Image 1: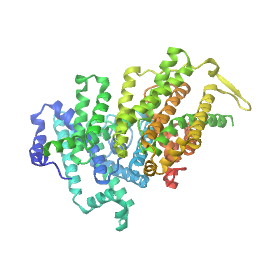
Image 2: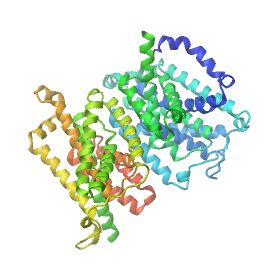
Image 3: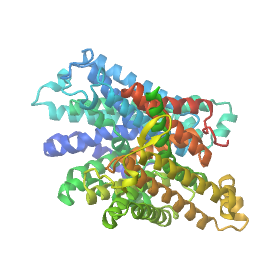
Image 4: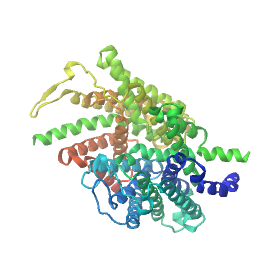
Length: 318
Length: 285
């Protein structure tokens, strides 16, 4: 969990700069790049948490985030006219509970599978959830999803919205990032890491490995849920496209691009992903985004097992 | 009754195509411990190249051979360039194949566009065959069953009746011991990878003739292979066959009786199997 020394010294100024970003950078950068990167970065962080603490790779974190997003959309006023309109704190809480429960359920279903089996099982869960949501008209409104989600009061004024939504997303990601770092130093975090390194020994010491796996997935579910809520508010809609296989793979790509061994990697990877997404038309062509993405993913993975963070730490150590 | 029989036949043919894709996936995992998440891409490459060749030569069987060879070649390339260097790190290998599948899917989309292609099989394969006691049924689907049996029997013979097969089966159980005995495990890996890719490419042409060739088919067949091997058990040929048939049947039964939630039936089947036998029906502990 030790950060490269350069990052440690630069952390406070960078955090401050990011907080002041709406006054420094043009709105395009804060709203279309940084805000999106942070919101997706939270979902990627939930995967990085699973990988770095427990050595588990899940391919359904975006689906879990989508559980929160759909719950939020259904419990807010929306253009689809579905669900029950509640006040936003209640709706957001319900959304968090839904994703946490979904995460726990995934952990419960998959507690006996590890490594690649887990990867396959979670991929299967993601696809099944996608098809279910796509086919279901009564609750999830099928292909169209739920659009026109009415935002909470503090985001409703169009003139202040860009700044406020950026601060909301940035503040949430900073908070959840700090929480994950802190978790690394708690007994729970230590136990999870012990489970990653040697589950059998941990079991012999009297820990219930199964319970800890489910706990890890539950925590990851809550983190992903926060990302899902923010993404839904950011887009003011949610549809099956948000949780399809490529979206889930994208989360994995972010996680690996940034470096799956450190929490910071999630945000770095998300930023790189969004930058590629936004600037690929100028670099290459609009349609060939996946080619660019696949190539950079392969190259980073092939040459640096720990992604950009790996490059960074090699560079600062020199 | 007639509907039930039709559902049965559809399930059988679908299961047969799934089997051809999944058997390679399962064997590759059993021996190499590599989860080839680009296996669906091999299917799609086989289908597209096979279509190209069958149009050029106006011979469906040439397309069949060409598609299989193209997938086999791509598989060999993957194994030699991407996977050999990262041997032993199964998670990184799985991620590399994810990246590779993104790349291949986009290259195929670039080259072939988003249109759906239809194969043009020889006339005696188009149309219907009258099955005794049932009535007419699509011939090409019956041909698919034949090809699946062919692939299954060929693989079974290779695995059970040749020295190569003995080495492969020994490798599935204990790779380290096998290489300690002086077998060239690496070329064994390559052979199995190519065999699996060939089967997948063949399935691409056959499946493409039964259904159609379009972008997105790769993830569909990747998913079905995943579910098949999760249900059937990794690295087992009978497991792949039983798993494929179960998935094919459950999908068709779901489609016929509650069409909106067909996938959920398959998923329920998978969870049920996992709850009872975490290593799949034929998987060894």
